[in-house]
Amino acid sequence: MIETSLFSLKRKIEDAVLRAETFTSTALEIEEATRIKQEEMVRDFDMWDDPAKSNDVLVKLANSAKVVDSLKDMKYKVEEAKLINQLAEMNAIDYGLYKQAYEASLGVSDILDQYEISKLLKGPFDMAGACLVIKASLDDIHPKLWAEQLLSMYLGWAKRQGYEGRIVDKCLSKNGGISSATIEFEFECAYGYLSGEKGAHNLIRGFSNESSPLEACSATVDVIPMFFENNACDLEINSEDLIISSPSVQGENKRQTDLSVCIQHLPTGISVQSSGERSHFANKMKALNRLKAKLLVIAREQEVASIKSIQKDNIVNPWQEETRRYVFHPYKLVHDVKTGIEMPDLKYVLEGNIGNLIAAHINSRAMS
Image 1 (cartoon, rainbow, N blue to C red):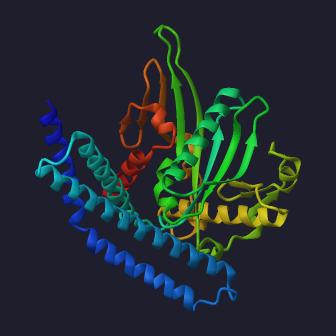
Image 2: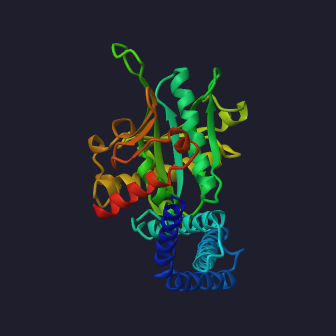
Image 3: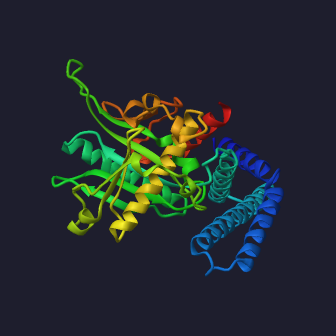
């Protein structure tokens, strides 16, 4: 039995090592060249001349360095797994060390999976950061608590990627939970990873008595690109098409509420809001940039050349598009409606382990 287990582990280790070795050196060479190019741009660029552009350059350099470090880490794990395998062939190893090699090979596979998925992100906005907006469906405690769980899930996902999600807006409920929250993920490809999360996320809880109705509550997720190079800022919108207001929102403090800005685009009915900045003007500019980015995405989805050609009736509201079901009772299951992927470990997913679900969305887009 132990020999069978050892043989199985050995095969898995060898498969992971072989898969990694087929392209690690080439990938590392390419990414090193990219990092060197980014470093040259930093040296040649006058940081004081254009602060916004300089921030973009530094973000790209940091992301490039992170990819290189990740590939180097993978190369180290490959060598570690190979060494332990060689010891095994000399009968100088026990099951515990074999498990250590297997865990190293799992680390190799995870890094490899993430790298390969990142190379599928070829959409026009995939390289952008992401602004993710969560809203409870109803003014009721259960949807608000559910929205708060989703907020925790996405923050957990970012942390597992080695990044931080920044909560810029959060409307708390007096009785617990949140009415809405906005998170900004300021790292490259965040939009490419998260764009498939857009839509309704439904919590479902059944009962042991089949005659009893299902208990369900919902929250929506919207995902808007955040452009590092201010692509969206070049988009011109007629000021007569906009209604700019300062709504009264239930923020974490009165100052945040007073500075809140909401902008509605009359031709499309699209509304965006910002309340997390330090001034009314900053919130106005943030909301305007979000609106521009959202309109660019919709124009792309409708395959029109200009935002003036967007058909209001064809805009898909997040409430109309079910993305995922999270079943809590009588069994636990996460079912991704768009891809058909199912995961039985609900707690694992809600802790932020949504990489497989995200990868399924990206693969689905790549094949369509």
